[in-house]
Length: 96
Image 1 (cartoon, rainbow, N blue to C red):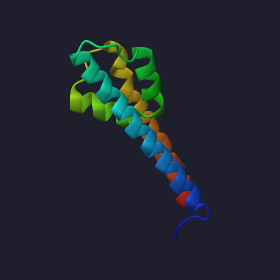
Image 2 (tube, rainbow, N blue to C red; image 1 turned 180 degrees about the vertical axis):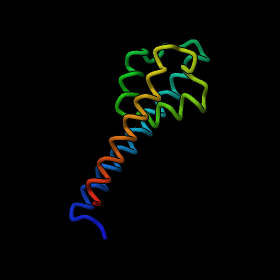
Image 3 (cartoon, one colour; image 1 turned 180 degrees about the horizontal axis):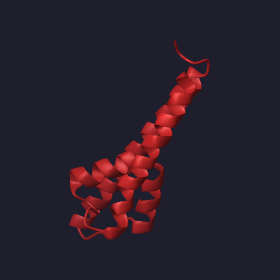
């Protein structure tokens, strides 16, 4: 039922989920700092994080309404779609 390397898959999936959770927290913290006029995370850093963990970034953007009107952040849903395609491709090839 499960592939031979199931432990490795579970480990990689756990790291991926933790990375997305971390990025979610970074976006949430940046929103908090924006409200308090504090030193914030750069847009470049937020976009870089979004490239590697778009699920956390997109969830935080929607939940906190953060960076949703910035044109540069229109790429986040594209990153999310790209990750979905890659994940489906990987899982299809693992379980076929």
